[in-house]
Structures are given as C-alpha cells and as structure tokens.
Length: 395
Length: 219
Image (cartoon, rainbow over all chains, first blue to last red; front, side, top):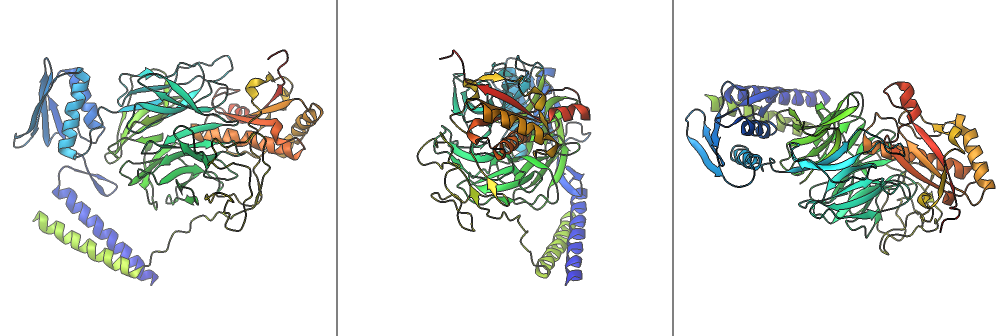
C-alpha cells in the first residue's frame, strides 16, 4: 500500500514536470521558477518623456511585466504633450490593442491611468497604480521620555505624495485602513499608553476608539468595514478581541496564557488569522470571527510564523518567518505548504492579490518595497526619508 | 505538434493524479488540540464591558470539559493547565499618578530571548517590590515591558506586555493585590541600550518598575 502510494506520487510529479517543461518550450512568455511556469509578459516602452517612462516602468514591473526582454510581446508607445496619449500594440503584428488619451489631473496620475489600462488589458486584473498605502515613519529621534518617535504616514503606492498623518512626537504606528474609505486606524502612545485611534484623512479629525489599561494595539478592520479585531491585554494576557469600529459590542475571542498578535481577516469576513505563541513558538492560527475554537494553520513545517495577511481573492496567506534573515512566505489559505518568496517582513496584499508591500531591513533602518509574488519582482519605494515600516495597503 | 504534446502531458498528469488519489486516503491534519483548562478569576473592580452585550472579561467561570464560557456563546480557548486570568484594574490609571522611577531603578528584571518567564535569580527583586507595596498601601505600580530590537513590531509589543504581566503575576503570588499593579509594553520602542550586540540586546529585554504615588496637591 505504502509503496503503491509512493509510486503514484512519483508518477504524478514526473508527469507534472514533463507537462510544465513542454509548456515552457511551447509558450515563450513563460519563466521557469522552481519547476513551475510563471507568466511574465515582456513589454517594451517607447516615445514617452523620461519622467513618464519611469512611472510606467515601475507600474508594470511591480505587476510582473518584463521590461528588459530582447523579444517583447507588446509595445507601449506614446507622447506627453498637454496630456498623455498611449498606444498598446502587439509587438509582432503591430496591431493596436488600444489607443487612448488621458486628459486632466497630474502627469503622474495620467501615467498611472495608462499603466492600469495596460494591466487590465493584458492581465485582466484590477490596476493598482492609483492605490494608496499607509505606514510608519521614524524620523530618527527620541522624545523627552526616551521613546523612539514614529508617526503614521500615507502615500501613493509607489511612495510618491507622502504625507504625515500624525505629528504627536510620540510612538504612533501600525496603521490599518477602513476598506474603501479614506479613514484608518492606528495605535498611539500619545496619551502615555498604547490606545487605538480612528482618523479621517479628509478632515484630519481623529477619535480615540479603544482605551484600556495594559497594551491595546494591532487594529484590523473587517472587509465590510463594520468590525475591528485587535490585541488587548486588559484581561491579563494579550488576546484577540473584536468590536464594532466605534468600539461597541466588544468581545474577547481568545483566552490564552501566551501572547496573540497581528490579527487579519479573510476577505469573506468570517475568519480571523493571527499569530499565537500558545504552542511555545509563534504559529499561525485561524478562528471564526463570530467566536469559537482557534485552530493551528499547517504551514508545511515552516516555523516562527508571524504577521499574516490574507489575499483579497481569499486564496493565499502571506506571512513573515521571523527567524534568521526574516523572510516573506506565501501559502494557500487552506494551509499545507508555504513557500519562501523574498527576504523581508510584514507583508500587505494589494487589491490585485499578487503584489505585496513589505518591509526590508537595511542595517537598523527599514525600507518599504513592493514584491510581485508570481514573478518575484522586487522594487523599493525610495521617496520618503527616514526609516519606514508596517505598511498597510488600502483595499 | 505543440497541442498534441500538451494534451499528452495533461493526459499523463490526469492518470497519475487519479491513480494517486485512489491509492491514498487523505488523513486530516492533526490540529493542535487546546485542552479546556479551568480558569479561576476574580472580578476586578472597574472592569466593565464597553456595552451591556459584550463579555465581561475576568468575571464568570469556565465550566465543563468543553471549556464553554458561561453566559455567552463564545467558546474561548484556554491555555494548557490552570491559568490565572486577573484582569487589569480600569480604576488604576498611571497617568493620574506621580511616577517615581528611581525607587526601583536597580531592580529591573531581565529576560531571555523570546521569553517572558521571570527567572529565579530575580526573586529578590520581586520580594523587595512586593514588600514595599505591602507596607505602602496608598501606592500603586506600573510595570513596563520591553524587548530587544530583533523581532517584529507587533510580536514585540505583545511580548513586552507578557513580560510585564509575568512580573505582575509574581507580585500577586507574593501577596500584592492585582488591582494595584498595571502594565504597559513599549515593545522595542524605548530601548535602554542602542547597538546590535548581544549585550545591548540583553539590556533591552527588561521589565521596569515604576512606583505610582497618589498625586499630592493636584486636584
């Protein structure tokens, strides 16, 4: 029975290998990564002024396009006089796929709109070039209490148009967006203990929503924008709690001796995923958002698992393996195996469920980077001064 | 030619997978069971849920082997064995008190990497602080938990809190009421030492005692 089972597996594996190697030979836009074919589309960009071309290159690279191929499959060309005009064409037949003008707004916004159209046309995915991220920025100083100052910032997903949302000269960190809105939660020590705030980016108004003894942190808003998960220690241990986004209907979801941290939501709003040290080492668990039993996620033998984030299409969970050189892993949301993708930590999925924003350590500094999981393309966001970490992608 | 090869490959894969599926039964992964322990708790003063329908943490017993929480429909998980859950006192706010950091400045407790257990070498520190609190009944205490800079920020914040709570548990075991001790974690955001040496890291993995005095002359 056992040897029969092994034979089946070996047969399946070698058949798969054969199939993918055949596919790789026959599909010249494929790239071999660990025996699996990943579709990376080679494209050439021409005709635009440098500023516009750089934006287009960034936008397309971080969703897996290959900009350096000698044999591009597609050609994106255009001009930017009063407005950007762009034409996407098949490189071989020269046949135009679309030809559009982008009047209004800044040149940067027009370039992003063109890139989004290319992505929609060729990948059939939502464009992310006009999305926003929030993060924590350390200007590099300590306040009178000896605390390392950090403020919450927001910017375009590529790091442009960065703006400080807090100026408290305290420790403000861990932003998390309300889905579909220009509002976000974060934790701040501004009132001398970690409490959770909600801030409206349009008005600048903020409310303190969660205030308890101990340490209250890690707000995570549900996909429908009505509930929030968080970590509170008010009952004697850091546990996962849940409430309405106005702080009402507060409930305790875990009651463990050891710590919990980093809750995130499944896109259907039914399940929470988080880290717990209950087994002795940080591991990932899931738990029904309505309450119930926490279940350990099978991460295929990968240990020290923290900072999970669930992809918007529900299929994958990205997390940090916090050991040695910290590494971003991605696994199917049902568990069973996890694959190392790139050095880094604290991943947050974009709306397209393939690009992540994450933190890279550079000595004692932190930098934000984008990572396209299928192509492994990594690109730093380099426009903001100071150490940046804890990114949250607005979805 | 290309499509013939692809079809042949797909056929082989399909056959192999079907054979594999037929030959092996899939066993469910053994999920880590969490034993339903019994929890004792005191109802801390001032520990009021935010609204009437929320659970009141710390109040109520976990009854029965399935660990169901009485009075709510939550089946909250307990850790292994007997667990003390004594909630923090909502009526004790360190911000309304005078802080004295000098009194116990030399009694800082240090922790091992990724650990929150209070090592036996610090028993004397705990005793000293406990004795002081017992003989000064109007004073309270804030325990600050800290980490070295290596871990991830969320985890470090929670670990620092576990360290502060572990010290609080030791003080309670030494006879100090849990209502008089509150906690805060700074994670790695308030280091005592800078640098990336093991010595610096060790100095940062700490629990700090902050004596809280009633405000004098303040309204």
